[in-house]
Length: 273
Image (cartoon, rainbow, N blue to C red; front, side, top):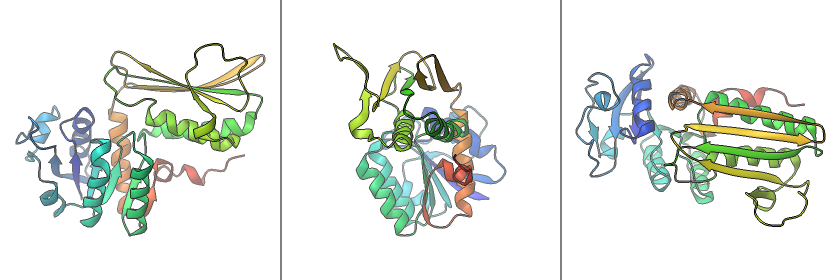
């Protein structure tokens, strides 16, 4: 069994991850980690996740947990992501990073760890459906060409801290790559005022917040006379937990390197026309 540590175990995603690991016969819950002073510290991780007693209590001691682990799943916070990754790599543990909002420096740090021998899967969205959406959007952008305007619209719950979502950013990056555009220069975040006609070399980005929406993402391709819309809607965080566990299993047989969910799902091997 793959002995797995969950960082951020008492959070919204952490509880789903705990339940997913406990229910998978190929994995065992090695430890459940929370930040110092968290009110869930000392409680049984299975009970906190809404299930039965797991026999693993939530702790703040990541270093001790890593000594008996094979893999780590981290959905905690952007600030903690790289320090946690360094600790996991130093302990020889495979690492799945689902934290969103990573900076360029954070991503560069993950690359350095992978080059030094770490096995890492990092993705802004672990959902299998969303990663199929990534693949399809690249295909559609290449097929339809420059005559179709592209707009990305995402909506999340009112407690989400970053905007646009990491998934929306990745969608825009993929679309920009397919069109030969620059994310930094040619993605327009919202519109206001007298802007004139929409330029062709532009990707619109719009972030909506409200209620308890888990995550909706739509990419619109529009031209004269028609439009094509690709949409993914997540109704439960369990889909992200399922993807994260699939990534842990992928890393168990992977060579050192930095991977994403496209690698995990084998989508990079599928031809694009």
